[in-house]
Length: 197
Length: 197
Image 1 (cartoon, rainbow over the protein chains, first blue to last red):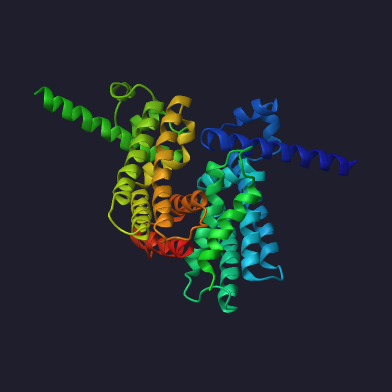
Image 2 (cartoon, chains in turn orange, green):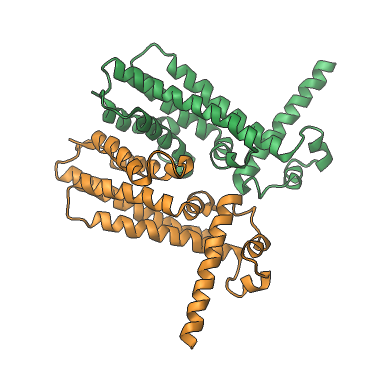
C-alpha cells in the first residue's frame, strides 16, 4: 500500500518534470511560472507545490536528468572494446540521438541551465566536465594507439565533437530527410577524417 | 537642428536596443518586461514606447542587427581572392570574433530568435540560409579547385563550421587563456584538415 502510494507519487513527480521541460523549452525558464505549469497539467498550484519545493528545483531536475542521460550513454561508448574511431563515432551518434529523443530536456539543458543557483550550476558543471573528459579520453586513446594524428589538439577536437552534437538540436526538424542516427554518422565521418593519422 | 534631434533619437534608440540585448541575453525574452528595461535605463516605460512599438520590435532589432553583422563579415571572407582554405578560415575566425565581441546580441540571436512572430522569423531564416550558403560556397569552390576532397559532404561540413562557431559563445569565458581569434584558428585547423584533398 505504502509502495503503491510512493509509485503514484514518483510518477506524478515525473509528469511534472516532463511538463516543466516542455514549458521551459518553449517559453524559457524566466518566462514560465508555476501557474503556467498548473494550467498545462490541469492542477492547482498547491498540488504542484506538494511535489516540488520551488521552480528552480524543477529546472535542476530537468537539467540533472539530462546530464545523467548524456553521461550514461557516453560511458557505454568509452568502455567499448574497439578502435578509438569506433568509440568516438558511437559517442557522437548516441549524443545526437539522446538530444533529439529528449529534445525539450536537451534544449533546457543547453539553454537554461545558466539560470541555476551557483551551487547547483557547479554540480552540473562537474557533470559537463566529466562528459567532456570522456570525449577527450577517447581521442587521447586514439593518439596513443597511433590511430589519430599525434599533433591533434585534444581539447579543441573534443569541443568540435560536442559543438556538432549540441548545435544539432537548434536546427533539427523532426520528420526531415535525415534522422538523428544518420546526422551523427555524417558528422562522425568528417570529424574522424580530420583526426586520422 | 532637425538633424541633431534625429541623431539624438537614433542614439537613444541604439541605447535601448543594446540594453534589450543585455536583458534578453541574461533573463531570456519571455523573462524580460518593458519595465525591466525602463529600470535598467533609468527611464519611464512611456519614454521607451516613444522609441519602439513593442517588445517584439526590440527582439527583431537585436536579432536582425546580429544577422547583418555575421553576413557582412561572411561576405568579406567569400569575396577574398585566396584559396578556399584561407577563406574558410577567415569566415570561421570572423564568426567567432563577431560572436564574442557582441556576446549579448549573439546569445539572443542564437537562443531567443525562435520567439519572433512567424513573418519575422522567416525573414531571419532567410538571412541564416544566406549565411550558410556562403559557407557552402567556399567549400564547393575548394572541391571544384581540387583543394578539398571531392567526396566531402558540403552540407554537413558547412554545419560543422557553423556548429563550432555558434557553440563557442556557450562555453567562452572572457579573460580565459585563448581569445576569439585563437579559438577560431584552432577550430579552422581541425576542420580544414578534415576537408583537404
